[in-house]
Image (tube, rainbow, N blue to C red):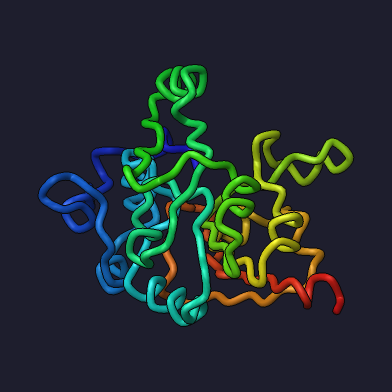
Length: 220
């Protein structure tokens, strides 16, 4: 997703549809995004530090899956989704680190604007603190395994297999191409591709919601 491939003279700024009067990202209906292009969403996403667009439909879906259980969001970023769901928002907030901030400044991209409601906890610490039944993640990067370098990931990424073993249900929102190499695809899961999901990906593949349940993934 190369933001510098965008011709700014030909791509419309859609921020007036997606931010409020104070400049903060807001949740909109999927209908609001239907008329936007992938390039427009990429431009907005890069400028705002947004990867996955929270919508009313996504919030409704997640509320139906949580069903009153204890839930948290990891890698919550701006924290808007967790706020809408009234659940704790957590993130390791790594883009606040001076070295990473300098890197993003060098490539001309803003860092993620972490929300005031986003508690600085990595995924493992967040699960240990809140002991949730449901863990929600949007576009988080999995942990790099040197034994499987082809799978990519990050040394500071999430040990998703461990998260699955620590909760009843792990719900991940992502993009089929961007997240094609997650090791947890080898574990039993359910995958949905509703039309009302949107992200800043421009690769032409579908957005998805995938869920892993502890009993299914362990073979119980």
